[in-house]
Amino acid sequence: MPQIGYRQWGLIPADTDPTVGQLYTGRPPMMTALAVDPYSSLIFTLSKVVPQLLAEVEVTALSGEKCTLPLLHVFTSVDGEHFRPLQATPWTKQPDGLYLIFSTQFDQPGSFIKFQYDQRHPLIVNKVTFSTP
Image (cartoon, rainbow, N blue to C red; front, side, top):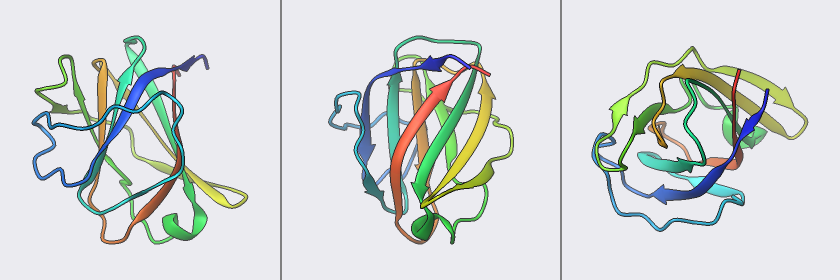
């Protein structure tokens, strides 16, 4: 499974309408652990577009154990302004030491991927990776 990098990522703290592009500060590709609050979104600019994408989201086990599936709602965009929801495979959850890894796969993503989190408690995200299945 070749990994697909991302050029930048960002956090939208209050994403009330995930289908609309919103201002965010783009961060360099290396993502650090961060707290994602309810109704916020993580947005990624992929380095290339592929027909199918596998996404893995690594979270701390303590913050992820309360999560119900689906963990995140997936949206995509070609221009970063108009997002459409993506039909994804059901999220899976796998323990990995102090972390839980949630993964899903989806078809026809654009160059922007947005994950909206709408659960009731904060989630500590350690890293997000993309690869081709």
